[in-house]
Image 1 (spheres, rainbow, N blue to C red):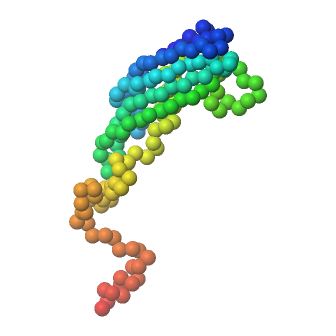
Image 2: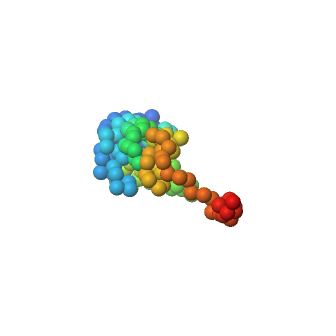
Length: 165
């Protein structure tokens, strides 16, 4: 969604509210698309004493695959944006400042970047997920498997002593 900011650039106190749905269903990570539902975006751009401030919130459900047990699950994602829009920098760092090339701003690009940056790098269905058995592949959240545990290789010498007796 592109917003034309020309009407508030020289109007301190002016504001442009926005509310729309953003489709990110084609966004792919590691072979799956986590944002299957539309993202609800709302916010505003306001001229606060000559400084353009963009504030927005984006809400959706992310569809993920657990990195330990490979089960699919979903979790809510809430993202907040608070950015300053400027046409030029005057000696300041570019942290939360977005440089405008014209009198318009593409809110969808800013929201998409914020959602991607706030996504978890490791997806777990629960904090205490046990994962899969490395030998047989059984889901250890459903109970223990029948595999014998490997002896610790550091104790192999002691195991040989026990086998001699």
